[in-house]
Image (cartoon, one colour):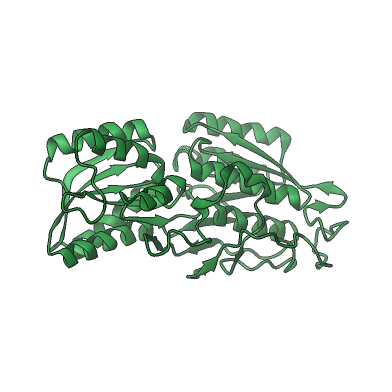
Length: 363
């Protein structure tokens, strides 16, 4: 199994030439190389089965993929399951009739989606999984994601280093998303594995609550956690989509103090979306490990173009994340600082996580 693993990238929010240049004719034979998703005179039809559409991550990810597919001359339909696995499975089954050229899926439940993807496989409809890997038992032509174990592990290491430098011990409560999907399990496992290696300064408390990726759930889980463990001084938040609820709870219980204050509750989160970026700038979030929604979709669009032109695609494309803190939160590369309302105008990214094969100028 091939794995693409690279470390650095740069996001340019400046205008870029899009789909310019001659491009190579692929096996599909595009009529207009400047529009690589117009194949044999017909726009390629891409459907994205999204697990939800309310978080900043999904707004950016779905909107940017639609933007890039349509710039390339294709059509892109976004269907959201609102975190209901049964709804997503039905949406997938409905595609057996319309037969899109490619289905992109971010499972609402890693196991529940397997029978539906298997039906797509049997119908010969190609499936690309994004961010959340389906459980075994079905086939995708590739899977694209950040290294989920590292997303958790880097946050734990950052907190451990901070507590060690301060000569203190961190007692951590975990505000989780949900463990029905593999990324939830891997993020928690990654955090706990690194915490165990730094057990002299980082201690996991027996408080790990699934807040179901909601601010409401995270708010209540945080309040309950500090009721049970009033001396807790660190929090692992599995996603920035729950960060507002965590901060609101800390404020109400009198424990919201800025980084540097001896009363500060250290927080490590994941995503570095608009909420994470703001919280770091405001001084309340120590670190957000960047889980770049735009990068996932940019790679996804490039892979779809290559796949539909007969190129060989790696079975998985996994890339390493990195930490965002006060030292780099103001960099122009932060996807969480981009204007979500203008996602339909975001230009393609500059990065080396995946190199287009069909044409260097396809995106």
